[in-house]
Amino acid sequence: MPVRNLHQKPFDQATRDKLTLYRDYLREWLPVFINGSSVDILQIFDFFAGPGFDVDGNPGSPAITCEEIRNGTNRE
Image (cartoon, rainbow, N blue to C red):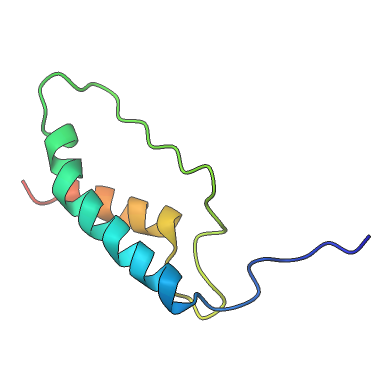
């Protein structure tokens, strides 16, 4: 049975919209958790993550998460 590669096409508009919402969510909430005095470890599980980028090089949720964590820790 042939294996279907789900990651050989660029993101469609619905996926790009979802990723914009996801980035906005992270920008609002990561500082709350990163700067919170009661948080020692922050774990983020993305169970349906793809390889990180689409075939055109647009970032997916794993790359967006890494970017926002890096940017969030540099904002303070």
